[in-house]
Each structure stands twice: as structure tokens, then as C-alpha cells.
Image (tube, rainbow, N blue to C red; front, side, top):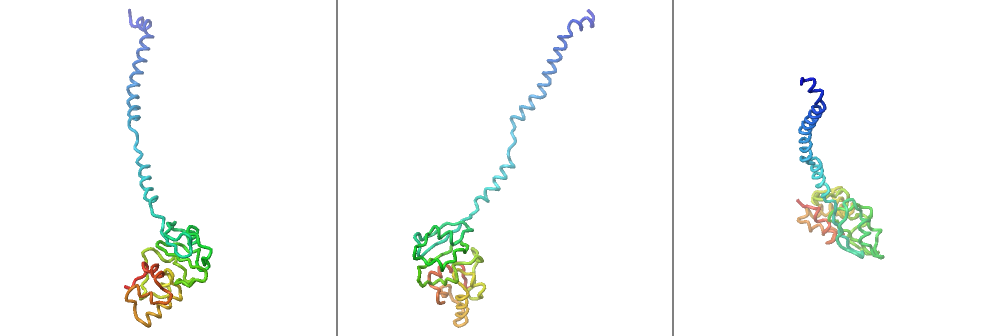
Length: 205
């Protein structure tokens, strides 16, 4: 039997065998690569970094603490958002019917450690209604030297308006410098309650 006769008789088997060999070779080349891809999953490093960077921002302190005293149903310390106003904390403290709200600037922005005193109608208080209870220029950690500050600086203090600021200047001119912080209570209209709110923000050095 020559090659031609052999091919004519067995060509189908030969072609089938070559096809099977080709399939096996292709499978060997392709399937291991696919299995490696399935086994090795990409680590989501970018997403992890983004989440870790976002966490500190979410943990930033956005709350302040404000104390409300006087003619309110619920006096005490309230935790408030940084952008809250006096009106917002009074909604929680609930002023009594006899409260003199005309002497309170309800649109004023709250500051941390602020003390708000709500007087009753006709009550004479240490707080001058014109002075308010704080200033938007007052920042946590900032202080005013009551021995050197002028009216613009003194009026940034909690409970000090132009009238009391002028009294401080007059006192310094007549009596000399303040020897200690508590000496500011020698100014008419500044008593213990006012001093409590002023003390963290004043210095004599």
C-alpha cells in the first residue's frame, strides 16, 4: 500500500487525530492562564485609600457646647452644631413665659463654651442688652489683653459693648493696669456671671 492509498483510506482518522491534538494544545495554553486570573484577584487599594482618607473628615468635631441659664424651663449645657444660633438653643431650653427675650439677640452665632443668661421681664442683670452675649469675631483660643486693648478689641468679648469698654478704659486711666483678671469685676455692670463668660478670653499679660 502506497502513501496515496493509505491517505485515501485513513484521511478521516488522521484529520480527526490532528484536530484532537490541536484542541489539547489550545486547552493547555489557554486554561492555565484563565485559572491564574481567577485565583489572583486585584486588591482594591485605591478604594481602600479613598475610604481611609474620608474617615478623618467624617470624624472631625462639628459640635460645640453652650450653657443656658435664667428664665428657661430646661437650663443647662447643650450640645449644638457649630453653625447654630442663639434662637436654636433657646428652642431646646424653652424660655419661660416671663422671660425677657427682647434683651437677647437671637440671631447671634453660638461659640463654644458660651454662657447665655435669659432674664425675666423687669429684671436688672449684669448683662447690658446692647452688649449681647458674644461676638462672631471671637474665636476659640483667642484672648484680649484688658490692660492694652482698645474699644474695638474689648467689644469682641462676650458681654462687653462700647459702654462697658469705655468704662474699662476709664478704670485703667484712673487706677492703673489690672493686676489680676478678677479686677475686671470692679467695672460697674461686670459681676461674677459676666466674669465667668469673660475669663477664658481675657489676659492681663
